Amino acid sequence: MIRFIDLQKSFWTKAGPKHVARHINAEFPSGVAVALLGRNGAGKSTLMQMIGGSVQPDAGDIQITGSISWPVGFAGSFHGNLTGRQNVRFIARVYGIDTDELIDFVENFAELGAHFDLPTRNYSSGMKSRLAFGISIGIPFDTYLVDEVTSVGDAAFRHKSRLVFEERMRGSGSVVVTHSMTEVRQLCTAGAVLENGELTYFDDLEEAIAQHHANMGTTG
Amino acid sequence: MAQSHIIRGDLPPFTASRSILALMLREMGSTYGDSPGGYAWAIIQPIGMIIVLALGFSLIVKAPSLGTSFILFYATGFLCYDLYKQIASKVAAALTYSKPMLAYPRVVWLDAILARFFLNLLTLSTVFCIVISMILLVIETKTIIAIQPILTGLGMSALIGLGVGMTNCLLIGLFPVWKVIWKIFSRPLFIASGVIFIYEDMPSVVQNILWWNPLLHASGLVRAGFYPTYDASYVSLGFGFGIAFGLILFGLLFLRSHQTKILYR
Image 1 (cartoon, rainbow over the protein chains, first blue to last red):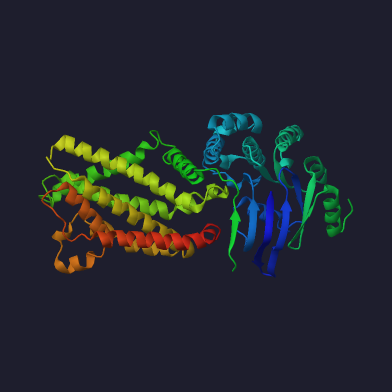
Image 2: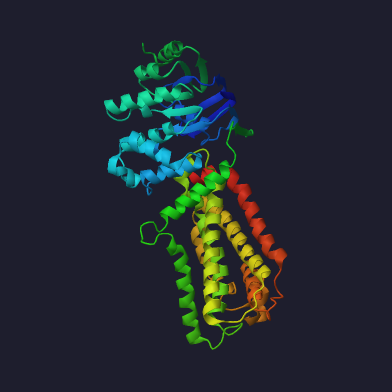
């Protein structure tokens, strides 16, 4: 369960304050795959980072039960001087997972070949995302935060990731940000729309998508 | 600004110690990672430094200020000072060094600081034990060693290093020019901290000023442990540890509230 209590967050820009969250009160139930929808720049990634804990809200609480992943897909979290293998080892240690098991899983999953033992600064962004997705999906979390990551790689890789992801989702919940409505429908059963600092949760994904399209002035 | 906090839910026990250990292991793996021998260089480097220092000074000066062995005299002073110096500079850069790792919510800023503190404390304690045992084995100085003042002195030096490092981490993060100012300001510390000249060697005018250098208290304690005839009566435990804990407290308080500003400026 993720519960937002009177959550506030804003940034200062030249055009004045930009509100990501103004008094958000909402609750995502446990074990549900929630699509987080909103226009570009609405603050979806910031909200994800607040859930993950790497960004502090200005005010209010986020209450979380169960373990939660870091926002997967923003590949900035790799240390450029460490190899893929060393990065995996580091994360396994932090999260208390068996190092060798996770390394085996990621090595097979991410299909990096010889690059797995090269510093991640030499990786393409696709390789980084594959590594990031592989690591996070290799660790059992109660809730996964997935930010645009399932759209990386070629068709075969996307297919494989979706299978692994769906397998994981059987026991876990997730919050997913993606711009592809096809993917949203494949991965999620519920939705939440972030618009103007207001977050609305819908048990039914189609209602959320309809609301999102209404906000955007487009048709689904 | 209203108080805000996130309730992390079910964090497994030992999350902090796990993060600290992971950070330490990753630093050991990547420091000197490219050179053959790897982390062993962290131990070899200060040993070489002491040998050079002792050889150099034995050519200029007839006898060290205490005892008869140059190498023991400089080793005791230098290792104590180096403990402070290394910890201070590594801790000051801890947040920027571990920044990519802080993206994982389970790794927090204090883990980054403590990991560097413990890793350097461990490394340099190992260096200390190796160097001192080697010296005592090779040159038979027949010293009666008192462990307690040595540990107290080294502990004081390490904690001053932690305090100075945390404070500098904060100040450099907020005002980058502080890095340059501190570099100039701290340059004479090597000479003023009892490595080459002990407190009793100094004229009283200098003594009155340098008494306020907490590192001189740390090195005095270490030397008192190695030289039974030397009691380092000027040393004040209250002053040395007071400065150390004062700086650590200052660093803790302000780093907590300013860490994001330092990391993402």
